[in-house]
Amino acid sequence: MSARPTTAGEALEPIPDLPSLDELPEPPPDQAREVLDRLAVVKLNGGLGTSMGLSGPKSLIEVKRGRSFLDVIATQVLALRQRYGAGCRSY
Image (cartoon, rainbow, N blue to C red; front, top):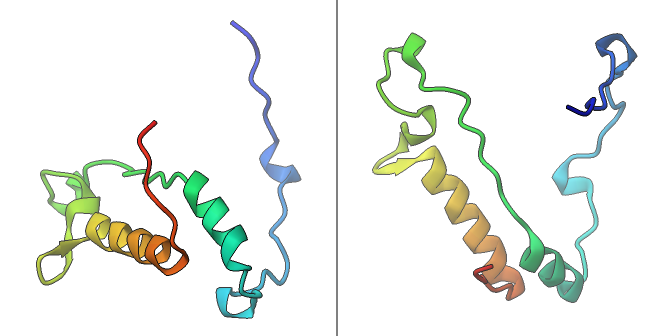
């Protein structure tokens, strides 16, 4: 078994003054489309939420009428793709 690279916790430092999304420049549409065409969104569930009294994934909790966390995330990604004309492909 090969050793995995690690970083000691005490060597980690917070990133100072990270800009907010509103402060970032708007990317050129062609560049945004290219990035979105290659983008993969990974949602880590983090457990079933049994300590919250749940019997299923926390990401399926209804956060708006009839919409779960996963529904909100998917809607945001689809809106971003539509805004820049990025497509969906199967690999």
